[in-house]
Image (cartoon, rainbow, N blue to C red):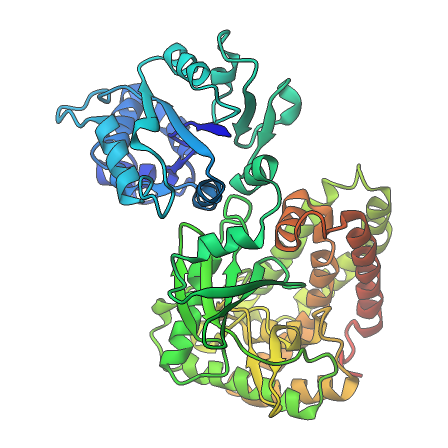
Length: 545
């Protein structure tokens, strides 16, 4: 199979580099907080002589600063899988020799080839492209003629104008990469991520693909690969190597769907915990950012389906270790936890944002529309008003002071741990790790749908957290105000399957053949209804009664 691929903004991602160079050159101020190449381009074009400024910036980025560009998420995995299958990859780019307004005359083509060389595009043991199969064209017409000459079975490009060229070969399947509306285009497949492109061309990810990807970070000979089911958003594999040793390989969610740096966050968090003597977590081994892969110690153990008092005691001890560590480290070393809730305002904003996003899908799901309008909304108005009035003034609008925050995995519970034969627990999943209000840690432990704690354990957890965070005089008051809000938040979180982009993450993790969206939506809808009933029964009374 012959597969042709465009280069700029298809293989290469420039968003961060454009902003960095624009700041360095003084084209934007430090205070500019826009994101993405398109947003920056539009901003510059609105300035005096903005078109010239934009063209200068393009020349600098594609030339002098080209080596600072990133590979598009998912491209590395796709190219490795193509190399394993012995498919031929051609890169065909509309790229002139020199950029506009570049007095230093950097060769854009030479810098592009350098970028590919550094990233091992031409390494037979990695991407395996032939250098002779990289082509640069002065015009779009020349580019299309080259695609026809190469007899590409597929061509992938981010610009629809390429496919509109009258000489584009009819025999070549067209994939338009980007956030376009599919209905706008005929005879063109529109896909917004390389994972989707890979599935379209290559089919489902196989264990052989995973082995080929992992060769770069697993030094030992791999004897067996097994996909671990039910691991949420990441795709997780157990890799057995020679000497009866095993690892966990995590393939994190597509960063074009979820741009949070989950690999970097988890690897850094586990490394820090190990450095500070907290060893009841997996040891981080190696990572590859381009492939979005993390390799970790494999922990033998069983799920904690029916937690007992000893399990809860270990969870309390772990929360205490994190809180003690919070007092020992430089707070700037670690960022805010994913979806941290450091004020009542932030918590309420998150709930209302989720509500708004789900509302956009209500026209397509009548049952969802009825639930939001008749069940959720009236209860939400009551909970929001009462909880806000009960929330301590200190963090009602302003963020909780950092000396009252704690380090948190932000998805902490028995659903994310394994129990060894000696009954010791190892806690997993730290890709949301960071600073947060300990109230969120406390409340989520109670409300998480996978926890299903008995009332005795809920009370014991509550008492332990009140004691652990007793140096904060407003902790209990804040917790009581927050509990109904977190129940409402979870009522919306469990409906994520109604949001196409979040359902896609689940599909990626489970595999499209194993993921039944309609069935998942029915199950999650029932959970949302149950959450609202629980909130009704606990609003402004003890959540542990």
